[in-house]
Structures are given as structure tokens and as C-alpha cells.
Length: 271
Image (cartoon, rainbow, N blue to C red):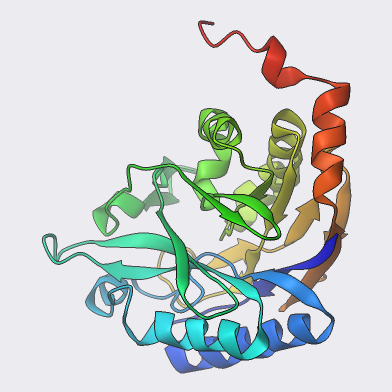
């Protein structure tokens, strides 16, 4: 049993302000005793897309060094929900990448967002994430002393096949750092987070961006960072504005729920 925290932020194009906000919230979570803290998608930068690409960094760049040092100083597992990772072979785009740091500050796992948000929310509101972001291609599961984590980012949440893959590879805790738009978040955020928890019979830790940003496309996000248990119960939800959702994680509950309703044994993958 351990305490986990899903961080809720309002990131902008001011990288230093984003860092100060993230550091303060992570430190607050650790002060409450959280052993696993996760920040949202676009933690370090949520501004104009061309700038996101121009400012992209490698995994060993200053953003990841900062978060690694923070994890080590606090002795926690820290998920940097996502940052803009440079692609040397494709300078016109970057990856949208999650990085998990161990309590020693070392990188334990990286995941590059697979499903990109290319949608028409309305006739006047369109998003084309693939214009600046190159998709990843690998599902990522990583084992820690706290439990086995399956990594994903935001729009991935709509693709249940990815999460079934993560569960087949042993995931007990699913991380979904996000920046859901206000429109889609109001309609779909909680139902989707709870659905993934129920169908995967695992905990879901879902950090979130909230409020208004200076990105020309994603101007306002829904927030409602949450933690959901394997029965689909919402254990904690962040209030409006930057803050935390804190909840106890009992890995033993995953095993008990999976034994009581053995969905994995009943699955017909050929269908």
C-alpha cells in the first residue's frame, strides 16, 4: 500500500514558471507522503506549436535532468507526464514523451505518445497534433517496487486495445497524463478514465492540465485530475486550478478484482 499523487497544472509557454509550478506541487505531494507522483501532459511547455518543436530537448537535456534531480532529492518515483523530446532525424517535429524517474533520479522508462490528436471538434475547432509531433510505436510497461506501470498519454485513452496490451504485459497501474480540451473533457474524461480502470481491472492515475493556456490551438483544458481504482471507483479528484489528487494504492486489490471477475481468462482475442 502506498500513496500516489496525480498533479494538476496550468502550463503555458513560460518554461521557468511551469517548472516552478511543477516542482512546488511535486514537493507538496511528497510532503504528504506520496511515493509515486505523476505530472500532466505538456508539463514543461504548453504554448505555440512551432515553439514546442524549436525548444525540444533530448532525454538527457535540462528538463529531464531537473525532474530526475527532483525525484532523487525527494526519494520518490516521479513521472514527467510529457515533454517535447527532440528528434535529430526529423527537426520539423518532436516526440510527446513521458519519462519515469526512480528514487535514485535515473530514467527508468520512456514512452512516446502513439495516438495523435488529429480531430475536428467542430467546424471551427480543429487540432492537428501530427503537424508537430511524430508518433511513437512501442507500448511501454515497467516494473517498480510499487507495482507494474503501463504508460500512455492523453488521446491514447480512447484506444482500449493499447491498454489491453499493457495489461497482457503485466500492468497493474495505468498512467494517463493528459491535457483534455474543455469540450471533450466535459463529455468524455471521467467516463473514459473509469472505463479503462474497469476493463483493465487496474488503478488509473490521470494527471491533467487545467484552465487557460497561451497555445493557439489548445486554449483551455478541462482539468479534473483523478485516481480511479480497479472497480471503477473514483478515489480522488483535483479541485479547480493547480493542485493534487491523492489516493492510497493497494496493488493487492488488483489481484483480488482480477480473481473475482477473470476477464483476461474469458477474452476471445480472435474477435
